[in-house]
Amino acid sequence: MKILFVASEGLPFAKTGGLADVIGALPKALQDLGHEVAVFMPKYRRAEPTKAIIPSLTISLGATTRFPSLVEANPIGGVRYFFLQDPAYFERPELYQDKTGDYPDNPERFALFSHAALELAKQVWMPDVIHCHDWQSALVPVMLRNQYATDPLMRRLPVVFTVHNLGYQGVFPRASLARIGLPESLFRMDALEYYGKLNFMKGGLIFSDYLSTVSKRYAQEIQTPEYGVGLEGVIQGRADRLVGILNGVDYTVWSPELDTLIAAKYSAQNLAGKVACKKDLLAAFQLPPENLARPLVGIVSRLTDQKGFDLIAEMAIDLLKENLSLVVLGSGEPKYEKFFQGLAAQYPQQVGVKIAYDNALAHKIEAGSDMFLMPSRYEPCGLNQIYSLRYGTVPVVRATGGLDDTIVEFDPAKGQGTGFRFEPYNGKAMLQTVRQALRVFGDKRAWQTLQANGMAKDFSWKTSATAYVALYEAAGRSRIPRAAVTSN
Image (spheres, rainbow, N blue to C red):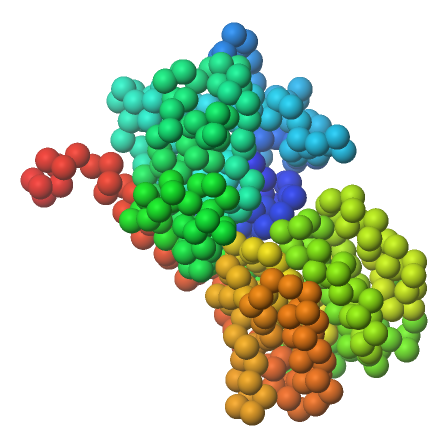
């Protein structure tokens, strides 16, 4: 099977969140299963050297015409990588926004990207299925079922659309419809109209053949008003075409036995190297060596409301009254960046903070921390809690989405479970659960059992990749005319 991924980011080329990890790993897992896979992304400022495939592509965006090029980088693990090259649109300091907010021409940027993806399929690399990801590629199925509806090469091409985070939908003013060149007929309730505005994500949900999201629980949650972010009715209407497939982890990158970015390698059979990693992590954040005896809590995250930082801000003083240290890596909303910087200034012996994206330091935090805190308001899948399990770093999470699917509450009496969870979204519940974890940390034998339980878990991509293949096959069958199915 030939599978074309269309996504706005992916490792090793560009990253703002977990989507990039998935695009960096799932295509390789599918390739390992014997499929042909290609990835299509925008070419950002720091992209790898490329060679031209189509030097000039003519694409109309409303009253304007652009002439981007299609280029290709060297394959990675057998996966081909194609890019849309349009420097004015994509060679910017950040992917989606600057310090003033979202780029105002995001509708045009990602409409161009979606249109170019279909031209790549038609002219360069025709797949058996297109797999689109999040709102930035959601116009691919919209355009395919409208502008390309009578194209004999394209009209039966199936599309799978994955929701990685329903909180980001690509909602724009109605006037954007004309600027991106889509017909006014699509501005209706059963297409792109959303409370008087244009909603890219809604289009992907309606016009794709099958839908997926990144955990079974999140697939259930987004059909409710609490988590549906205004699209729960649309998703309920397509529930028979929606599946939850848990994200996997690339253990060649995230494993303490193989990790080249940490101070010492270690395994479940020999945890000695984890002590060296903790020493190294404390040094990286300039925290005193005496913190080695204290439990060390790590956080690697976008600093946003979604990730539960309002709970941490509410309970920070009480949290730091416990005998623990805290290290935080991330960037995001200015209020949380300032909060954590202030906390580190107020408690320099206990708290270390770096406002940045730093992959090497993220690995050090996973390896050197004793616990990993993820009190998310909602979490479609989450990857850091899965990384933490493999590194013997015990997750403390809110039971939502993928966090609920991947972390089993530890029972000290039975020696079963992999972490600690709380259900109510409030600071007291979070603090109580951290204290519960601290009590178990004080029992060395119980803690080692807990670590071993987590390190034994296998969330590799093979199982998830196999589930996606089944989804692609179902999408393909859905595009076969009924008469053809009957005759077979």
